[in-house]
Image (cartoon, rainbow, N blue to C red; front, side):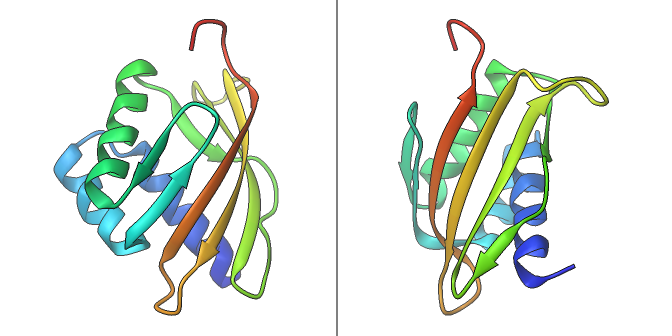
Length: 122
């Protein structure tokens, strides 16, 4: 497992954490304080906003798990990876692709998200 894969798996684990306080600790560990998150539906800057955004997604899709959907491809300080959000062992309801940028301290400073499959009305 490479450094980027470890970082991405930690990032996805934060997305899967249902307890806001526990998730906030994970967010602080893997994301820089001034992190910027941007996807077609949401934007967030900083630990509080990202934690709240993840909580909103968890509320909208309760019981679903975000999983890595292929290899993590990285070079220099950026990486890309595909992910799925769905019931364990079943086809994901949401599918996406993220590009992350890593800061000098090893934490994520930017997430650029792309959504390939989203349920109607989401």
